[in-house]
Image 1 (cartoon, one colour):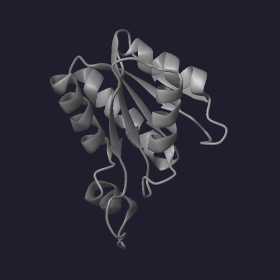
Image 2 (cartoon, one colour):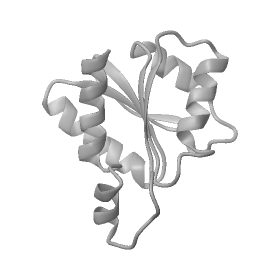
Image 3 (cartoon, one colour):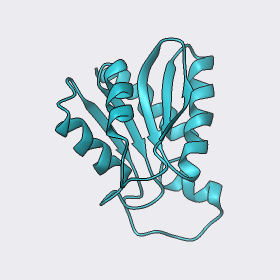
Length: 134
């Protein structure tokens, strides 16, 4: 597991893997241009998940976390992160899980990332919404 980006005063932790980590990094740049710092974590694997790093990152952002994955949520990063946060009793957790929620279609990678709302724009908007609801 690796923290691939950490802003000066992070408000939200973003956890993604594969192509979504690149989208998360793009989102972090856009957010920071608007004055919103984040932590971006690449878990590399779900099993074993580095629960310590995840829990420390999410605790440092007041329990706010967005997970993003390019497949169905069942058995994915979002569920693994939620389980780790629960197991380690991280307080005040508010998690947004971005994942493919409908039958997959064909298209270019950019079209599919946008369609399933797992692109940089959707990640950034989820971060803004999460902060507003906290």
